[in-house]
Length: 249
Image 1 (cartoon, rainbow, N blue to C red):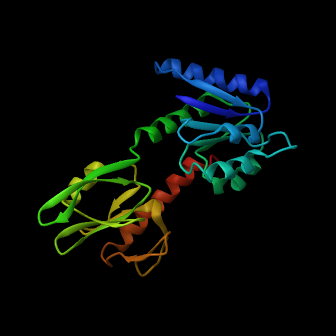
Image 2: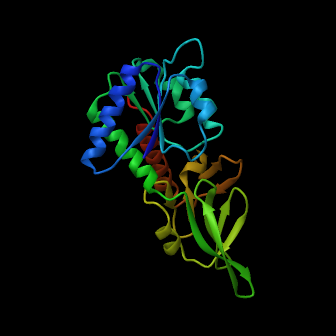
Image 3: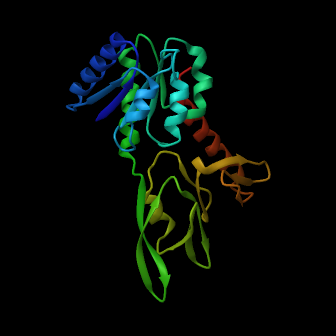
């Protein structure tokens, strides 16, 4: 794996690199590192796809961008790259949550805490970024279609056809729900609410008591009254797990 370390203290850079290398040696893996002493230098050299994850010191040299400010600019060009904050101050955790960090590591970085963090990065990288399906074009014709999971909103049945709603378009698929679920990661992100509605919880903004589901793109859908309670409980569990992975309290 290729990691970026944004840290202005050489001693802390070396400590983190040594711990990562020790962990990777146990897994028969190798790691490469690029180290940056400022947020500005990191952003100048960053390109999407260059790194598998970024380790970012929150308290960078105060003459320039701090870690949170650097992370905000990073998120504008790379929304999903795993980001790990390193800090000596717990108080920054809530400020940093808006850029969706994978974890917080307190200095001096502990090998056990880092091990959990690296396992989460491995899990993240193992999940597909997209699925490929056969979309129905009409008159018996089909065409291969790639659907990015971040664009997937929900799926439902209409007139005995499976319709996948995405941020860009609605796609008629020659699939059953069971076949579609087999393609999706088993991380709690995708949830089958009853027999006719498949939700992407990462696209849900709010869940009302009457079963109205507000999506982040402004669209509203409705959960059946019979499935409302268990669907909301699954959504809350997903949010709790996301919070646990994002912030170590």
